[in-house]
Length: 510
Image (cartoon, rainbow, N blue to C red):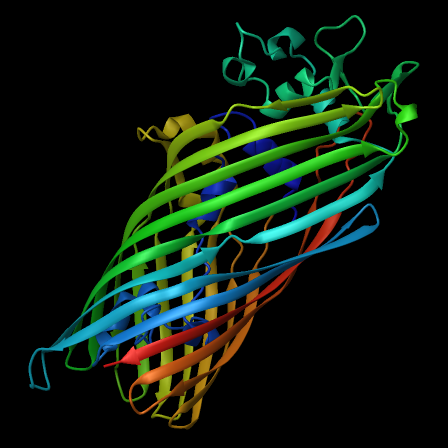
């Protein structure tokens, strides 16, 4: 991945409007199915199989396969790992969390005994997790060539410093949108100073003036910690119909819920404070954003059995119409070698807006070898260049810049899911799967690949226990913590990302 963290940070914290950006809209539009233990073990390739309460989120016709009632509950355990290499220093972070991936019920009502026509109707309701945002990373290194404050000072050039002052008559956080909140906080905590004889040019507290040059005063320890958590979940209200045991239809009304928290802390500290003319010792910048949203969509699907053993299925989902609410705030904490300290908090930013995710389609085929084995393949797609951002009052022109970026830089992406199941004994199932999620970005981003497996146990009384394990294959991305600036290049780091999930489904059929 080549999308730099400096880009992400700069977009997120600029002001009350720009805080809602194209990458947030992309994140909230993507689905990476969590699953029940059975579906995740088989790569979530259930578009033509059905018969699972989580699979109703993949293909609504899944409920029409049922000839009985079923209740399932799926707790999960997941771990995310990151390994960073920044300025030749390596750091590792791991975060393990518990959750609930699926809670569902499906039932079937028999209509008649005729072998043709409508044989049964089905209904179901489930709460399914569609994406998980959990991650944690830490970066540190010693830098003697550039600084976050130097980049900030250089980028602020041309803005009158009086417009950055916080006082009783002037609140630059709201009254002066030309400056970012981190710039306002840095100026008012003396981390930025005006250049001699100029009210429009700046120098960072980490820099000295040497002749006609602005230079980094001394070696800095740079640190960046980021923690993200939250998920995208969906409550599915489902109805289905069985036609002649050959054709199955289903429809969903989906109510999505988004919860996302992003916590970032960047700091620089002087290895030798005596070298800094500003008496700089250290500073830290904290940024935290909370996003919450609700949305609606509808999904239609079918499963057909053209001849013995073969199943084909397909589904299409309307866009999800999301109403999002964001809150964010920032803090600068500065310390100097002469004992001076300054800690300034921003106000809490708040903004409501709308995101319309793209249409989503899915096709699948599977072959069932009696009660012995199953092999299944799904192919799914969505065009992320069709994401649309609007204000709460449905004004898309308020997000004209973001929507143009989406149209230009995002693209259609397809996902491949493959799964297999073997039953060596009536009570035992062995499962394996693979899934690949395509890259929704044209120039940056990356594909995500998973391998999975699991086992299932079924009793004669209708109780079953499934265990599923999924491994995220390692991805690497490059990043920079701030932008290049005049005569200085920001260091580029590398981050390796991996993770795993373990799911257990307890189910009852009656």
